[in-house]
Image 1: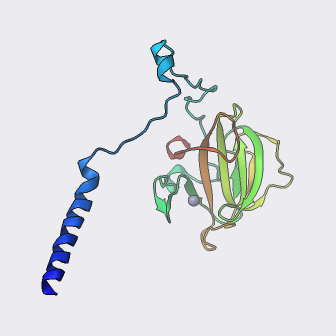
Image 2 (image 1 turned 90 degrees about the horizontal axis):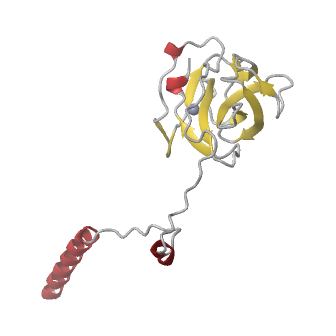
Length: 199
Ligand SMILES: [Zn+2]
């Protein structure tokens, strides 16, 4: 019996050693899909290149701090902070409840949306429809605010609050800058750090 156990133990150790070394002994095979067939390559066909949409690589436009009366020194860069299981990818601007939230840039109200996390939110597209400005946790919208409304930098969108998942004792604006995908859907894009751009 003892002998069997010893053999089992040796077998187990061997297996573990093999398992531990296994993945490292051969390079992981990454299959890169190609849009060019070998036959096409032989004929000299170049891979298809996705033509960038207007401004795909262009820098964001200048922005103002989107909460009335808040100085840059009162903000900090929290774009890369981890919140729960995701990166924050936004800036929180603390201010008393009811402080006006103002448009960071000219643009158009693309969507007024209520979500579990963001609460009362505004999605504003910039005039070139390259970037979206996202304002969340609003206490209320500015009176008459509606989708399609043209905005000038500094126009009041709403008021600082704690709707959504904001702590009820910490009113703030959650502000994000999103580079839109070429199809310009308000819910799709790549988050860009607005902190260095806010003046
Ligand atoms: Zn936030």
